[in-house]
Image (cartoon, rainbow, N blue to C red; front, side, top):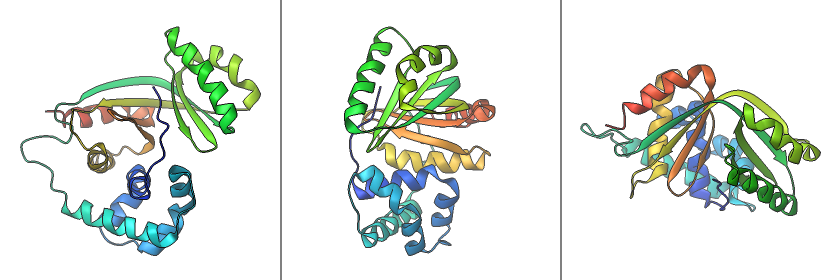
Length: 219
């Protein structure tokens, strides 16, 4: 599975803030200067949006996000993930590759062949880079195809995959999930989104704690 589409500025701001628990809570508590926050995430917003973005546009997006976050009231009867399905994968490794658009096309073709063979491979495409998530068993085979791109390897992770219920706004859900995980002492390493799935990358030692916290929200 992969995510490839460019995001609007508002959507990019929402994704970046909800991936950063300290920034998220600071904005909810209204103790962070919006202009300073905009400067801090400017480069990341442009990466997700795929083009240049005026800093004032980011400030406006942060202000809108702040208002939405303050207005959100969790349901007393239904969890934030009601109707969703969870899947936990441990011993996850992440490969980061800084590659051109042409190189991305070649790499994605190779990764899709591995997927057809049943290897646990997931990838997410960004302007100028790819991130590949897999397990230790598949790493040897992947590296045979990717070594020449000089991938950066990070390990010691787990991945929580959340298949959202039809009609859910996953970007509203992720803000609540970020806060929930933070309150349970779990810090997200990364987060990815497709049309019907949220993928959260966390440190492996936090896997059980995170799974139980999120499972409580599926009821």
